[in-house]
Amino acid sequence: MTRRTPGRVRQLPDTRVARHCNREDDVLAHLIETPHTPLSAPLQAHLGECAGCRDLALVGSALRLDHATALAQVRVPSAGQVWWRAELRARQDAAARATRPITVASGLAAACLLGLLASVAGALAWWVRDWLQDQPLVHALLAPLAGPGTWTAHWSGNATPALAVGALLAVTLLAASAVLAAWREQ
Image 1 (cartoon, rainbow, N blue to C red):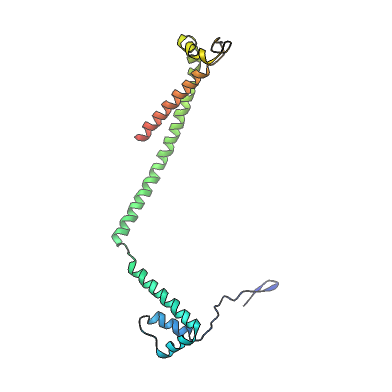
Image 2: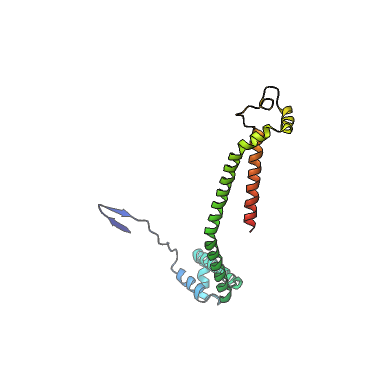
């Protein structure tokens, strides 16, 4: 088979199946039309002589048996059950589409809350630092951790204690997590 293209001729591969025997159509017709009846005597004699037709009959009967077994095992749901499943799926999809904006708004609100808490923590960090400078208990707890001449021994006016900032951030994150968890529970 050839296909003409502009300027040249291209040879296409032949996709037809090569036949080895002229009686293959008879074997196929018997397998398809009358699978449960025995073969005629001339066709039976031909299967004894022709390996290709014998293989065709063997494969065809195996496929026919597999088809019959599959048909016996198939369970088609009732129309009511199919309708009910389709309605349930449509309701679930509609509910998911309806709650999508609420989920986005919840995420934005949580992000705003975290931003607000972080800004409050930043604003209060100086107040907490000043308050901690006046507490002798903080000095007593931090003195063993640092040697003489460090920020725990001599507080300077511009030094921000790392412990105070860390504690403030931890409290802020815990509060934000608690608010978010309570919000999601509702």
